[in-house]
Image 1 (cartoon, one colour):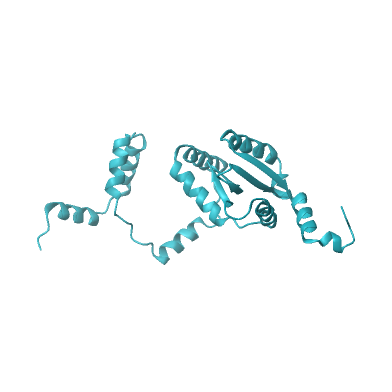
Image 2 (spheres, rainbow, N blue to C red):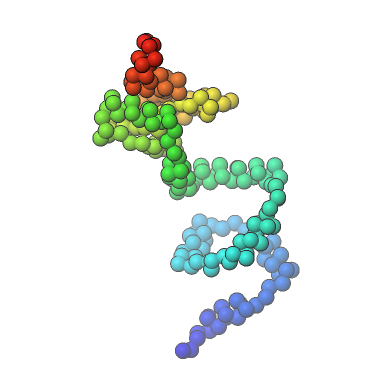
Length: 207
């Protein structure tokens, strides 16, 4: 089978060893280059269907050893943080992927289970959604058809500095979308479930 000229050039380029000086020049030439949207789309299309060869175990071990004990500087940490914030604000696919992965990883806490039981006793089973996404946020329980949402506030997470202000800002945005959001704290939910199960009566206490 004859190989075309393009394939021969590609194979020759693969075998070519690029010097450190040439690599540095290539890196410097691309630093201040601004790509247009059309150019970026063309680059994405050209990469479709191409996959990198799997990394060998030896290579992975070398990377792990080289990065062991290495700490990023405060400037590098802040730079990475700002890059993630910018990506979150401008890339809806990135936001959706992060929110979906968080909702999958998120395991229900005890008070979230209690709140779900309370909501089901009031509204039944059929319409209730768990870990429901509203915009960029995920609420513990929701009924989309009625635009009702509920959150269970644990003592540890929601009493930390700045937590209440963050929750208020989040709730204001959700209410602005037409939703009604209700919050139940940990003490209320634990008392409710004890009374519901009759534990307080067994102890000889009555409210």
